[in-house]
Length: 125
Image 1 (cartoon, rainbow, N blue to C red):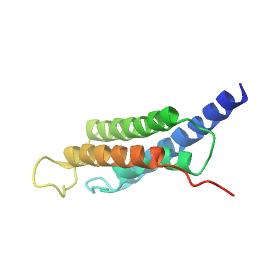
Image 2: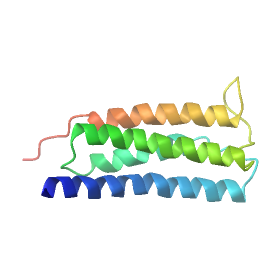
Image 3: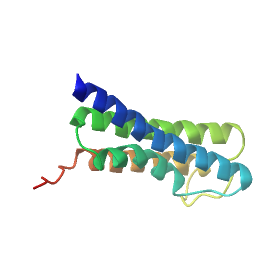
């Protein structure tokens, strides 16, 4: 039972980091409309599994759920920014606009997040 409580606490903490970065991305986009923050989507997506990596006691399946959760937060933030017109800046990709670039960044961040989450942790001595 204690392990489940620890897992829930770590998961809530980890998703909180993704939500915090998503809020920061939204605020900065509102202050600077027309600017594309290229690293924000992968940063939001990879925040949750990265927080997991620095803590112990979470199962591999929970780590993967955290990576998917971080990517979902990033995708939802990109969608919300696009709906309110704050994702209208230039894109680094040769196709699509800032929304497509953000979604590609979310996918890359999600894949990196899964890799970070499932990478074996070093054994402490």
